[in-house]
Image 1 (cartoon, rainbow, N blue to C red):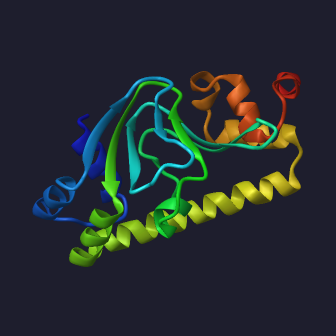
Image 2 (tube, rainbow, N blue to C red):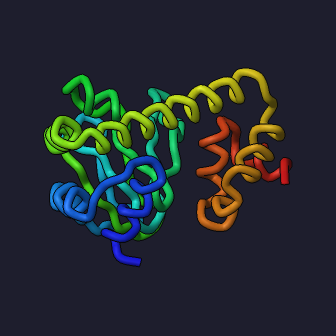
Length: 188
């Protein structure tokens, strides 16, 4: 599937665009290629866009003062990622986003997203749906971190996203779960 087809199928799950509307929308996305380990957003950067994953896997993460990594999100195909706080508040990035594998992305700038949303109601509908879905996932994850032990969180992650087991190194899964690599080893 081409990047254009992947994005079209993704949008079609929630919004009905004519071929003309979709083509116009697609013109606003910039294709980008990254190699494994390459940085997409670095803490302190100006963030002007969000990224739709066509292929590959990325991680959004924060390094605390003790140099401990906390992974906020893995982004796999058809997922979106960015530093949304920096994007929406026009502040510098407080997190990093980099590539766990080689990745093909489509970048949509904030200005282009707003333009498309104001011009095409179905695009606005799509982005509202996507944002709401993201809030639900964030709330579910936060509640899991507050209420579940590491084993339950790991089992839940593997049930929801079994492809992560083979795609993401174990030390990154441990960082996502908030446990050490040794603790994770005891869980599976």
